[in-house]
Image (cartoon, rainbow over all chains, first blue to last red; front, top):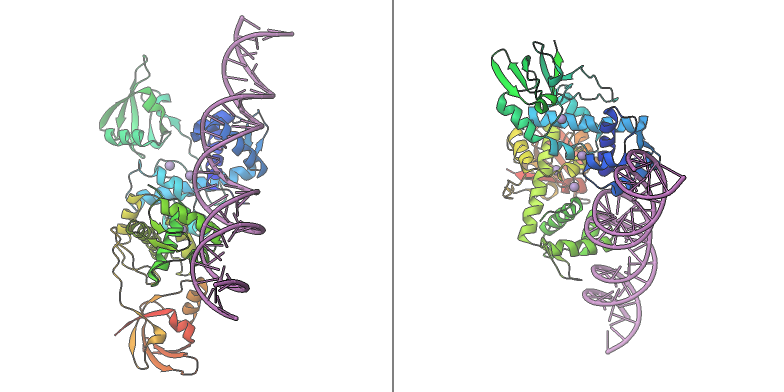
Length: 220
Length: 220
DNA sequence: AAAATAATTTAGCTATATCTAAATAAATAT
DNA sequence: ATATTTATTTAGATATAGCTAAATTATTTT
Ligand SMILES: [Mn+2]
Ligand SMILES: [Mn+2]
Ligand SMILES: [Mn+2]
Ligand SMILES: [Mn+2]
């Protein structure tokens, strides 16, 4: 049984929302995530329920099923592999890849993805530091915490960003923050939670709490 | 004004049919080419007419407009560039690329195609020997004739295939015919038009007239 | 326990892209 | 010139994916 492009996009959104802790995902949550109206979501949930990729009880939100999770992870795998391709092979900037990958992820061809994976040398992370599920849907995730939750004097390495919007990524480019950078927290302002960070042992950087919360760090 | 995936596919079909000589393309021609019913075609022609990529007079077939030709050539460009990518970079066989390219050609991103073109080193022909239009829609086509129309003792080089079906391409693989092969006509059987061909000065090959008519040769 | 509010679903509509069957126009044959 | 055949269009369905407005259910407050 196949999913349409729209169904794949909804399922991916439901998967991401499910991963954010909550046991059950609401119609409104999905509508917000998908930039559609709740009425459209209700309709789609019914369809996805019939296809048994989610478990849907009217008025009580949805749970993703094992099969649904498997499908969502396949789409995520494709999305992230294409992002790696765009950055590594076609010299896209990391803030230019998302929309295109959002289309490419729906191309149906297992052979294509298998070959693309090999061509890219079986990458484990995408340009935003997100892990690429393997063909069985297994994800090797690294322990990582938001930069703003680190204590003064602690060190680590930037491994991912939470917000992959072009605006945020371009801001990071501008201030010289990147995946792989070594960082150390020099100071935290109690008043507003803003941070002073040392990047690569040479550059000092000030950032708001909001920015810090969208940078994910592997502590060392 | 944008075209949907279905509209792009129809327009491409109309373009190809137009190139086959005939001044005007009929509803039935399009239906056959697209594997749809004439009723569906009528509806689509009305829409394409409204978008002014074709000129449509009920009951009298269609003509592609200049704008339509430009659009069709862009889609063809994308299709053929992706085919080159699949063969050159992902090691697809030339009989495995068509369906995937048929999907990839609809990805909307001028930057993607510009970068892909550069990554592939600005190829001029696809894996089936068909010319790749440039970004302005200009096509550099080579003079080429069907192998079965050559005379005995004439020589040349295989530069393209007319039929790109997997079945035909696999047959060519099996008998050792490929784009770029040097060939010479050793004999033509008058009875059924079948041919005896010398490939690369070493291998002799017998083929039906039908096969010969689907192999395109640059004479030398 | 009502009333008010918030969340969600249903009904009805639009648009795309298909189909089959019926109607009609064009082309061909008698 | 009429009849027959062929090509094409129209009418009426179905399926997907979205919307707004109205109705309904669930939750929260009083
Ligand atoms: Mn998508
Ligand atoms: Mn990403
Ligand atoms: Mn296509
Ligand atoms: Mn081709």
